[in-house]
Image 1 (tube, rainbow, N blue to C red):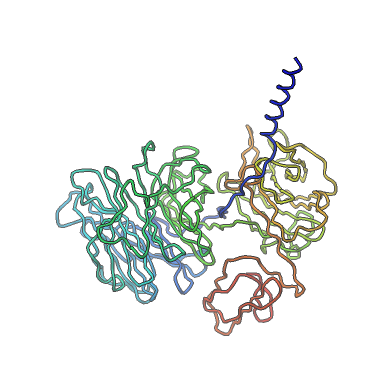
Image 2 (cartoon, one colour):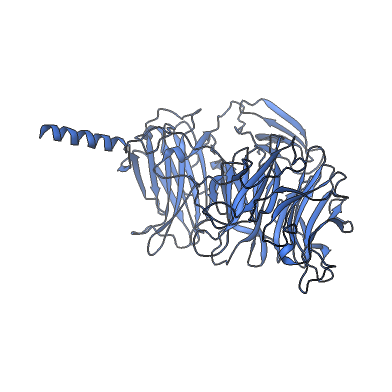
Length: 619
C-alpha cells in the first residue's frame, strides 16, 4: 500500500509539474493595431481600390468604376479630391482591376485589365494596358499596349501588378489562362519594360502548378534588395480544396531567368501563413507589402469567422516574407455584407493602409505595426480625464487602438515615473455597464519581471477594471490566476453617454519592484470586454493569450534625459511633411545629442524629438 501511495504521489507531482510555468521562447514579430472607428471613403463607388504614397507626400488611389478612376489626398488620407476618369470604357470593353506605381524618376503608371462583355468577338480581347503621367497625375498619356490574351472569359488574363527593380527594369505581373484553352488552368506571367513602361516584352511564365490556378499576383522586392517575392492565390494545396495565400520567389540575381518558373513542388513556393498561430482562413486575393523596418505585411479575403460574409484579414511576416501571423481584421463590418478585392499600402514611416470594397464604396483605415508599447516618463493625474499635462506617449493618448473585431473601439496609452506605471483607456461604448453578470471593462496583464513563460508565474498580474473604476487584481500561481489584494493601486473613471475612460496607477512596490524597471521590457497585454445580455465579448491583442506571458507585447520604457527632451527608442523614421524650405528640423536622441538637422520638403530623419523654430515636438 505504501508503495502504491508513493507511486500515486509521484504521478501527481509529475502531472502538477506539467502545469507549472516554464520558460519558453518569446513571441517574436510585429503585430498591427487598426484604428477602425471611422473608416474614410476614398471612392463613393467602384471596386479593386489600390493606393500608393507619391514622392511629393500625396496619396494617390485608383479603382475600377465605369473605367479607371484616380484620386489624390494631401492630408494622408483624411480627405480625398473628386475622382478623375483616366481610362474610360470603350467598344463594350470595361477596363478593370487597376494597379499603380511611381517610378524612381517620378513617372506614374496605372495599368488595367480590359475585360470584354458578351457577345464575345475576336477583335475585343482580354488584355493588359496602361497609361503614364509625367507631371504628377495632372495629365495622362494615350493607352499603351502590354499584352493580349484570348477573347473569351474562360481564356482571359487578369489583375496586373507592378514592380520596379533597382536597375530601372519595370515588371508587370498578371494571371494568365490564355495558354490553357482546353483546361481550367492558369499561370502567373511577367512582361518587362526597359524604357519606363513605353514598350514591353512578350510574356514569360514565372509560376504554374499543373492542374490548378495560380492567380492574383502582387510582387515586392525584399528589404535585402536580393530577392523578389510574389504573393499569389493557390488552390493546389493538398487537403484544402480552396485558395490559400502563397508566395513564390526568385533571387534578384536570377530574376526569373529564361525558361525558369516555380512549379507546384518547388521549394520556392510556400504557404504564407503560420498556422501554428492562425486558423486556416481559406480564400484568395492576396496583397503583399514591405515595411521600412524590412518586415512584411500580407492580406487576403476569406469568409472565415462569423457568418458567411467576405472579410479582409491581415498578417505580419518576417523580412523574408515568411512566417506570417498576428491575424487581424482592419475593418469592423457590422451589418456590412462583405469586404471585397482589398489591398494594402505602406505610407509615411510605416503606417499600413488597408483599402477595401464595402457597401459599394472604396474605404480605407490605418494600422500601426508594433513589437512593443512605448512608455514615456511622465506623471499623469489619475482622475479619469485627459489633459495636455498628462503627457502619455501620444498627444491624445491613442497609442494602441483596438475594436475592429467587436466594434467596441478603444484607445490605450501608457506612462511611468519613479513611483508608478500608468495606464489610460478610452472605450467608445454606449450605456456602458458595470453590473453583473456581464459587465463591460478592460483587462491589463503585466509580467513584472519580463519573464517569458507558458503559464503565469508569481511575477505575472491581471487587472480587470470596470467602467465605474472597480478593480479586481489577480496574481499568477504557476498555472492560473488567483485573485489577490494589492496595496495602493489607484483607479479613476468617468462614464459618459457614448464612452468611458479608465485610468490606473500601479505602484512599482505593489508588484514587487523597488524602482522603475528602466532597461527592462516587461510583458504586457490588453483585453477590451463588451458586456452583452448572454455573455461577454473579448477583443485581445493578436496572438496574445491570457495565460501565456510569452505571447504578450513588451513595454519599452523611454529614458528621461537631463535636457528635458523626451526621445524615442525606435528604428523607425519620421517623414517630414512638405512645407517651407525655411523650416529647420533638429532631432535629438535619448541623451539629448543632436543626431539630425535639415529643412523640410520630405526629408527623412530618425524618429525622436524635433525642434521647430525653438518649439519641441514629438515625432
